[in-house]
Image (tube, rainbow, N blue to C red; front, side, top):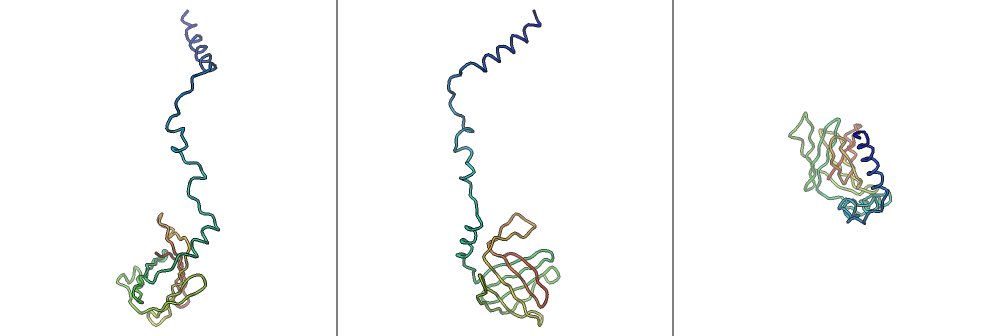
Length: 151
């Protein structure tokens, strides 16, 4: 008789599963509010991103940075402080700002070479962190061109 006990238990489970069950109260996990539908999650389409970026003004004061090689630039009050790991205190010099395409270019002279920071409104990742910046940067010092991000 002991061998029938597991068979009876299995048969009971099968019958219980096939029998109509009273409607259960939905659990929190089953409600639409608990798990937002894919359409409710924020998405950025290429068109929406371009529209948003075109309306985002480029500030007169900002911080820009680049990696591999590392560099940073702080622009405030028409002056730039440009630094690298080799020159952490940086060099300070005046810059001018002019419109360029969909953005602006800050220009100056560092160590006798022209420097330009071309800033455009575009989502940018520094490639080393999870930080997303609102501006993309192209940095030119003489013939050397590097890309970076700014905020």
